[in-house]
Each structure stands twice: as C-alpha cells, then as structure tokens.
Image (cartoon, rainbow, N blue to C red; front, side):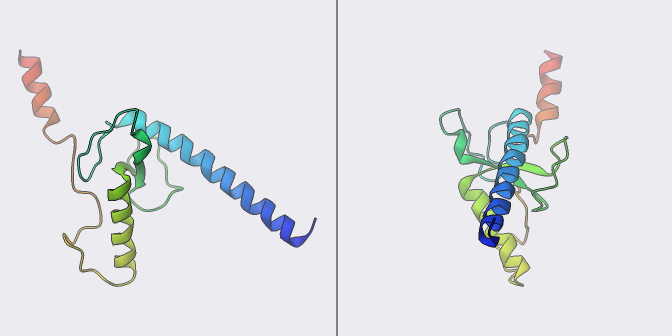
Length: 121
C-alpha cells in the first residue's frame, strides 16, 4: 500500500469512528431531552428533526457522559452561532453580545412548579 493509500485508509476509518460516535450520543440526547432548541426555543417534529443538533457544552466531542450533562440541543443556526462565539473568544475577541459562551434558554425552568401544581389537582 502506498503512503497516500495508507493515509486515505486512516482518514476513512477516523470518519467512520466519528460518525458512529455521533449516532450514539445524538440518539441518546434526542431520547433524553425535548426537541426544542436550547437557545431560541424553536420546537421540532420528526419532519424537521434533522435541523436539531447536539452541542457539546465544553466543545469536546469525545466527552459524552451517559447522563447527557455535556449536551444541549440547538438548531442549526444557534449551533453555528455558538461555535462562532467560541471561536471569537479563543481568538481574543470577547465582545460577544451577552458576554456568555453558552446557551441561555432553559426549557425546564419552572417545570418543578408546574408538576407541583399538577399533583395538587
């Protein structure tokens, strides 16, 4: 095998491994969390679910704890924005709009109170 062929083989194997890893955590996160963007609160259905992505809060795609604590679901647009902001901070430009580097919407805020009210009925 030539050096070029060996390199192509290594790259292809790395891509397959990445795809397998992504399928695993994507499927888990979609079962764990409601299909809502954690930033803009857009809701998703089976028809447009491909536009909902899994964002790694620490930007490490190999950090996939089974409890999902490093994941949040973001739409394509918010996910792209999140990574753009992260890149800006890494490059020394910290003048982001909110000064925060993570999503701010919490789809579960107030859930405990809603459940308490439901249980009282």
